Length: 292
Image (cartoon, rainbow, N blue to C red; front, top):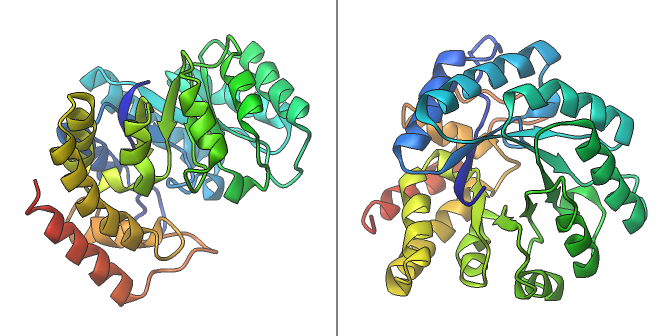
């Protein structure tokens, strides 16, 4: 669960169906670009907007690519309730190497309730969990000591950590040097978190620029700080542009422009991005090529 993992979009045809050929092409592109693994049915994949049959289709395509390439597949799972999260985890576990399980959202349970939530899900499946801490989406902030308690669970192999900033809790978690992998989930913060001890990252932007993120990870691991910093400085405007509108609308538009998927369609309530947003992101992507 270390290194860079690309969080995949779910491509749709113009008529709104899951585009399996584009999905397979995109997954292969990411692995060819050097990322260490794939993430399916995350927020980037519009998982909550897919039917159960569509979710299964996405998993089968991604599992086939991962098996062929010998790389891990992380699969998103989890809702605001523990029982429903267990049901979802059991359904998806057979096609996953690890389950990415979000901190219960909206309800804002106690910290103890969150720890118990992950323990219960972990006891119900045979694959390890990667808790997904993203307080600016869930509404539930977890202090460093609670995050470390979650990491200490036997069922947990690592954590996708998206604090939204390098605050004191982020520094404290990384300074504790936990035995489990911390994967940065904020595309713009991957380089600084790698420098502070994170084991890798989960990046939606890696769908478009897998080689840059893979090279950034390798350069940081090898101690080539000038190379890593140059890549970070080039990737930062790309990440900012791709998230200038609700994800993954700008990302899908750029992937379609680059021929990596056939159609940029997103599902309601998401909207197609403004043309200027896509143009800004493509300009940043073009500038990135000069650094590679």
